[in-house]
Image (cartoon, rainbow, N blue to C red; front, side, top):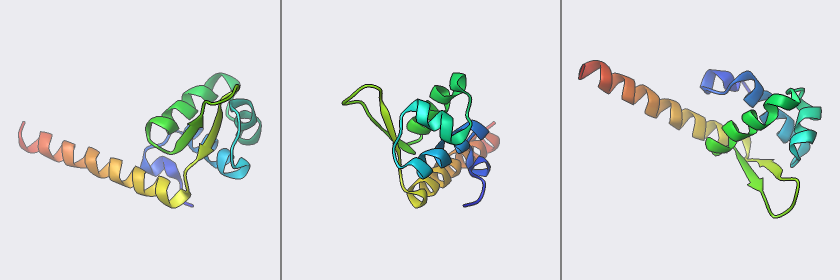
Length: 96
């Protein structure tokens, strides 16, 4: 998989996503250990991934567990978000 940063993820988000792929599912602590994302930033990274629809949060037990969507789905969602962003920029540029 190419760098997901090219599609809008931060370095920590990309590392957390890749860590979750390796784990299958995991807690924030497990993601920190697997990915090397600092403990103080892992919740921000996971929240960013969740807001983009790249992870599912399992809240039925404590601590929360996170599961990644399939890589093909993640890339499709990121590409579509990038398309929307570019369309908005074009519209803004031509209507300014």
